Length: 64
Image (tube, rainbow, N blue to C red; front, side, top):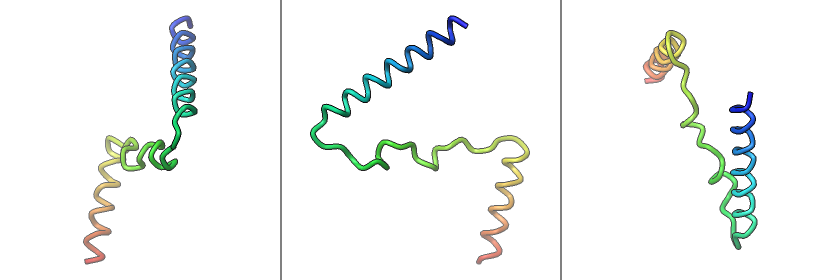
């Protein structure tokens, strides 16, 4: 539990630091710049991911 609490505390401190840095900037970029990209999201792995990949390939073949 101590390790989890310490990690949580460090995360809060880092977040506060990032917020302060952003507050001091004169100009901010668009929100999309700060949000994670959708394509970097975790892809399903294992059998489910393989089946989904084959479905996408089949759908592309059906279109052409």
